[in-house]
Length: 156
Image: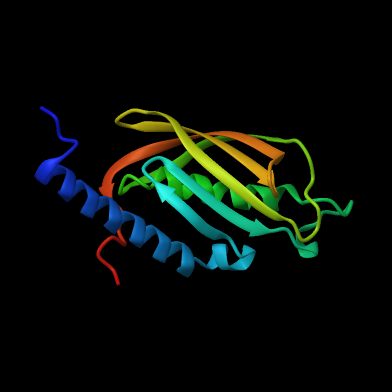
């Protein structure tokens, strides 16, 4: 049975739109995202793109990017991609390789892509780039997929 068109597709498109709108709204309200000025710029099922400007207050004792700042960006992309199916997903594991430090004032982008999903887990490949493509960090992350709807789907 082909469900790529007709009534099921229209229902699925409305559902996807509702999930996307709810997640975008929650990220705008999220205190942690506000603290780091994290911006959700793209979202689809199993996919997310988040940006952040690297500022001097994100530097470590050596004047380079603090790992926690890059982790914050990675985690926001992971969080939104993992929950993009409309059900609660929580982090189980993240393995990050820090490859380079960004330039102060640079716009950083984390892109999370789902590479495998089962009923209970999903794996994501997440890359952080500076500007038009300088790779700063690479991450593989695992979520546990709970069987409950996102609690904020019906909020305004």
